[in-house]
Length: 619
Image (spheres, rainbow, N blue to C red):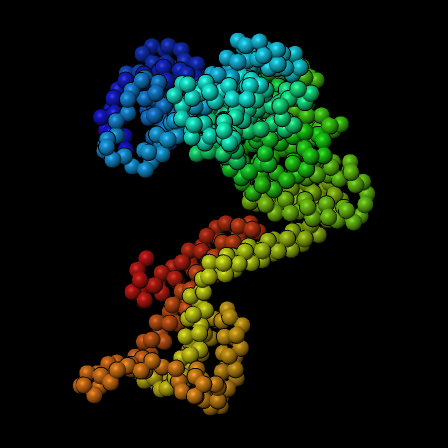
């Protein structure tokens, strides 16, 4: 825990207009400062910063607070991350409450800080190699400026560098600076051989990867030319570490986040150079998945800044396949999706060089399609009028529509699909319902498999078996009640009929149905009881306490209360199961009216709570 003294010092020293001024262009306006909102695309400044009160207010979005809340809102920092950011900016030493017994969180933070220091040193080392060595200028700088056409502004903005050809030059320099070999290995810069340590990045242009606060957390290294490259792999990334997980970061997000917020739109590309080329052409709200398959974590990262995403992948077969793979993932997260359709094997890098700035923006708007139209174009390009392939194509579109949670959007996409595919909407709705049912069954099957893997026998089955045993052992036993007497069997049958209960186990259901059929005869006496090999009932006899004058109540003495408790528990589990089923069904189909769905869940929950009260379990 950071001490209160340190927090107080950080807040008192921090200058709110300077901190916010790093992110928003502020102009003096009387005692305050004024600027354009960083949270909306406004033309008239409504963002106010008060240095005296140390607060800010954005009248366009309604947001406001102190310097910490600004960093949390704008930079998406946590409270602790905001404090560390300010402490670093004002060179404040952080003190902890228990200086000599730090928590695991504090220890992990210190470990991560060591990794951050190595990344920062590597960044500066690679930049120095690019600009101030003959090898770097000949290989790296010429490649970036001559072959790829990047200007100095972009090279500096993204802090590009160069890793030299030498086998262990970087590692040796880092060790001389005092960095430990285990952290160099952990960061993915060094690999150990039998008698020496090798650099992992050699003769490559280096792309630093930043987190949201601007710290370098890893690198991507691109080989320059296959004729003299030390590796046949075009791109290699830093190895996974505590601060770098490829599936949870996006290249260029640090540089693009403000533009994404302002334009309320994010372009998603595949490669590092695609990001650089688009930035240089004026499209600054762009990020890259760093050459790996798109992940849910990356989609959710974009969702922090905007719900509108445009997939801008390469126009070759692999790029088209990547676009098709990403569609359902993006729709499942409630994002508004468009996909750019480019042909002839072009990519974002070549497109950005092909058009002027104004023409490029026009091209991006004109060439983006919703996923139904995009899939139609793919089908038209590769399959034409093959009826078999078209049927699979239609089901593919419906499968994507099933991922949409918004009912209005789902309906509009069905209309769009009906129009484009020339298929009646009622036919599409029928097929969509079948897909929803399959998805529901699949989810149920996965849950069953999980339960089996966890070796968990559902409590509901245990209670069913107890009820069967009660019927077999005590079915004809008389239960005395105030109005009329009944039997154990009749009491259980009445409860099941009144509550419309059904056994979930087929085996238990068969036994119970047999009992119901014989109800008019001899009750449970004709059924096989729970016996052992000798024909004796499987009870565990108590010690002969009665001979010692001690009365021990048996299960039979309180059979009515015992039955009531089991039935109440069984009802409660059945209702829990029904609630879960309703939620899963609603999440998959989204066809129910939301108010009706919520009322149903509330009613079922109230019944469940009443049952819990009767069982003396208040919730």
